Length: 80
Image 1 (tube, rainbow, N blue to C red):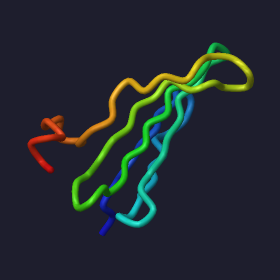
Image 2 (spheres, rainbow, N blue to C red; image 1 turned 90 degrees about the horizontal axis):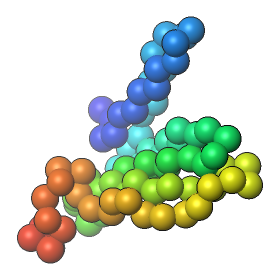
Image 3 (cartoon, rainbow, N blue to C red; image 1 turned 60 degrees about the vertical axis):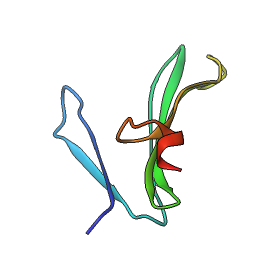
Image 4 (cartoon, one colour; image 1 turned 135 degrees about the horizontal axis):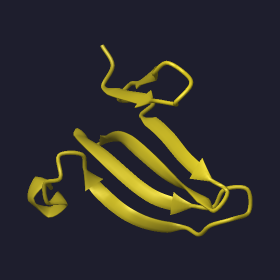
């Protein structure tokens, strides 16, 4: 069974899915000509962890971390 699961929907296509293990994690990008959003979900010391970032895409955009913490939204310090 997969630890992580991702979906993507497009207006003219059916939903595509991908799975990730504790070892591999899962990464997705949603992009436009102005930049992209990258979401990475992986295991960090037994905690399902998410990093949400703005990232450049084909030379446009900037890099900024929007969230870096547990997928549950709990305070990371409380989990440690």
